[in-house]
Amino acid sequence: MIHTFDEELKSLFGRKVWKLTLDAGRTCPNRDGTCGTGGCAFCAGGGRFAAAGDEPDEQLARARAVLGPKADGAGFLAYFQSGTNTYAPVDELRRSFWGVLARPEILGLCIGTRPDCLPDGVLALLEELARVKPVWVELGLQTASDEAAAAFGRGYATEVFDRAMEALAGTGVRRVVHVIAGLPDEPEDGALQTAAHAARFRPEGIKFHVLNVLRGTPMEERFRRGEVPVMSRERYVALVCDCIRRLPPETAIHRLTGDGDKRLLIAPAWAADKKRVLNAFAAALADVRQGEAWKGESAG
Image 1 (cartoon, helix red, strand yellow):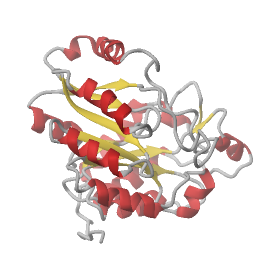
Image 2 (tube, rainbow, N blue to C red; image 1 turned 30 degrees about the vertical axis):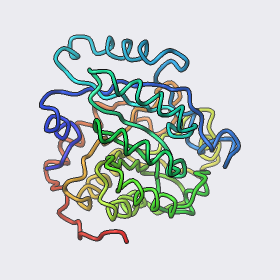
Image 3 (cartoon, rainbow, N blue to C red; image 1 turned 180 degrees about the vertical axis):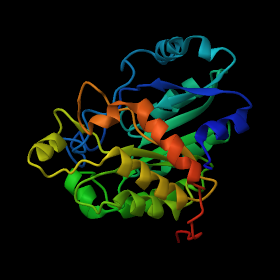
Image 4 (cartoon, one colour; image 1 turned 90 degrees about the vertical axis):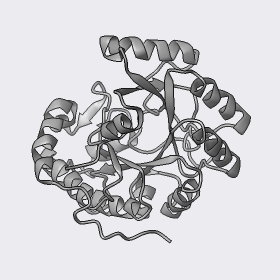
């Protein structure tokens, strides 16, 4: 028995809620030279799922049209997914976020960013937004191991994530942590250690991903040299289930597996068959109770 994001949304809004993905065309400090130029070694360019440069109205209409009849009677969250979405001047962010949040069909915002891109002015803006409608801020932690993070070029220390989680806790936004399983340079149970680290901050949400080796990335080069072991589907499912046992019961599970670009995917091949992965989770989670191994430790 786990606490899913879908259940949380139905409880909050009383109906089915879908995410509509937006691309504000923002870059990343790990790409523009601020802390790096190549991005994280596993990243193929920021995961652009909408047409950057199009007006938000056009992007939202297109995303809603893709849903077809499923959109009837539903509510929507605007998901700023691509790039680092708090990495811009505060006035620009204010116009961008408020312009979308003011739309009556938009029930809240999901904002993907990095923990090193949350200066005081941005925190104040997020708090302002969260007083009007729910706001989820997604932080790409990926690993709590500074050694593994340095190897893939994350560009910040884990203590930066810790400070960001503490700062966001006072704003009223809902904090969502991204965790990757299967990273080289960390133990096989590295995702378990990362989830346990995140659990100390009692995050409102978490997303799990398996490491995808994508064509054209530095991680592909390491994979070709035999430096990146590939995790089996069975091991991945078992590891994520163990993570969930160690999470606070109230942390919403936003994602059990990711949606990598199948055109670029090199390994693991099983990650391309999301339906089969989710079926494996459905069977495995029947014996899992979220929080059963959580010890209640808190940060600070």
